[in-house]
Length: 125
Picture (cartoon, helix red, strand yellow):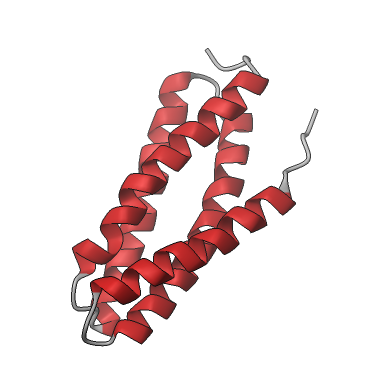
């Protein structure tokens, strides 16, 4: 049975990510702070939205815990790699400092999100 995805919750999380990480990027960069803030905020919105939907889908299609973990690690690397490349292209002054909060909090977000999904459905072994 296909589950309906919680789009309202996902959108709100993405909206909050835009403001939190955009504000952080602004404070982490002196040169080009506004461009870095808008870029990081926009990417955080899109990435949070895509990440949450992907986690919902990955949770549904994963056959075991190892597959789930591998999917999540791959997704995380793809998102962080994309963000680093975009910030390099636009000339963000402090790329690591700009991405570090999103990487740490994003990892916790993924773990908590998946644990909540797993609590609701124990089909994955």
